[in-house]
Length: 511
Image (cartoon, rainbow, N blue to C red; front, side, top):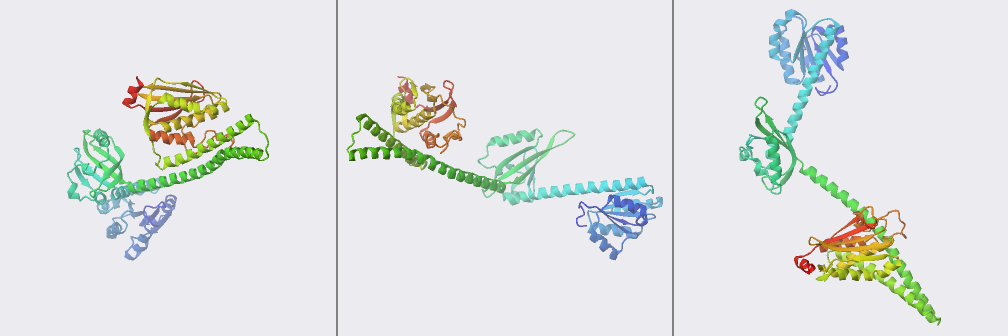
């Protein structure tokens, strides 16, 4: 049979009932295996029966129990301590030995009646008693396992330790005599906020169970995370708390493994994203370089061929071609410069030159530089400046931030762009709004090589996908905040740039 508490039930019937065919037939309706012996097994007979490890042993007695019954019960105690012992009295004359039998060893007894319903009820009761015993045994084993593998302590109502188990000492490194009568404060980790313990004490003092993950400190200074459960034991009659039991489970290894798995998953995700970003970058940036480079090559080749062949080129056309060459070269230089600056910025090797400058003048200069691009895309730019405002930061990098956002607005807007600058409660606020389609994923667009609108073709994507990421890093370095909102006035996007002014800047602003 194996375990005494296995799912399959086996019954050993000893005594006269073993010869009752009707009784045995009914037994097979309740039990998976039934073994029968008429007499109390002797030493030689007991071994085979004990080897089968029956879940239930039923001993039937029709007269005064022979001395061998008591000896057999004692043997069962030693060899099969968890077996359910049932005694069935078949005759009233057998009742005279009941006290002796119950004192010796008996879990359940009953009187035999020959009718079918009585036998059925008898087996129901036997089975029910066995299952209750099994449940109690399993709960006891579970509790023992829990206590052996948990960090258990008990305290009085003042929080002073009255008991700790062996595992408590093993994990924490403290000897039992070092902590008895003391408060658990010796385990507190310096980084754990006092509010955690205040919440714990408030909860258990009201008679409620408290559970939390707490970082603790061992005797040697090492730390361990514990899933901590504190149970108050309340006297039902008086309603007063008698003691507290704390059951801690060391989850340091579990949390470490979880953290390592999360780190690996994050690294794999980042590697995949970097690989995708590199592919997207090569595709997009090659287009951004190839287009102006083709313009430069084709137009210079045309001008060179005309000179070699001594062909006359209209002055206006020559100026146009040279202008396109200059514009394409400037665009290439701008893209390359941004890439180099981005590399320096990510490596924290970008140097800043701080100065105090007029914000309005700096913004006007950026707008003027972008007028050719605005004219090309047929965009109108309006600027609503604030009063004379001075800002202390890197003017060149500030202009780069504005230039990237403005360039984005020109490329993705429709016809109108609005720049608004104001000072609110000592904070500079610059808004750059457009009347384009807007941006759905307002956070993702600041990531490297990301562009809003995945459905667009390569030719429709007007940029390298690094401009706003560059803006994000510059803002973080220079103390700006940059966010995207929906433009309430124009219906497109609204890039909001903010920075707290220094006291000296604020004074200059109020002049």
